[in-house]
Amino acid sequence: MKEENCIFCKIADGEIPSKTIYEDEEFRVILDISPATKGHALIIPKEHYADLYQIPEETAAHAMKLAKKLASHMTKRLGCDGFNLVQNNGEAAGQTVFHFHMHLIPRYHDDGNQDKLCWNHLTLEPEELEDMFQKLVDID
Ligand code: 5GP
Ligand code: ZN
Image 1 (cartoon, rainbow, N blue to C red):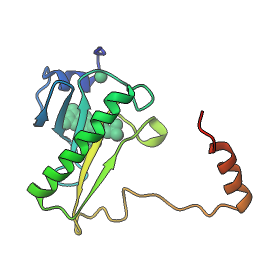
Image 2: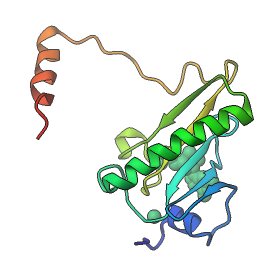
Image 3: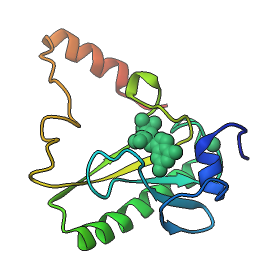
Image 4: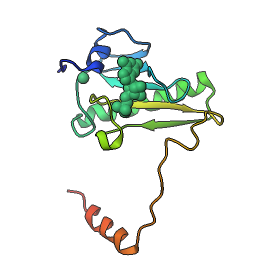
């Protein structure tokens, strides 16, 4: 299913042109228009799923398989020093386009992002850590 007014549906469809580095029946991989680093690309499923909660397990598995293939390809071609896979879900997590996508971010020692693409570390009290553990242990 496509969603009207979704920019990534239009890009995935080819209705809006993009710098496509890979395409198959299920996905299109494009260069990000506002990249974090040189070579920053996005894996976009051709079907519309808003986020990780919505995407079928099988499509998510295929996206991860493709991410592995592209990480190797991009590292070989770009000679990058490292690689981030980023996937945002929800406004609180920084998602701005509400069509599932996976960021492929080549990293370079001198890319100027060393203090970014990371987070502050909390120091939790033992009870808080235990509380988190009790909430999360035993998956349904
Ligand atoms: P998010 O913040 O939702 O995880 O990531 C959205 C990403 O899509 C951003 O990195 C942004 O630069 C990229 N983006 C948004 N609109 C376009 C577009 O029209 N073309 C391309 N190639 N990238 C886009
Ligand atoms: Zn869409």
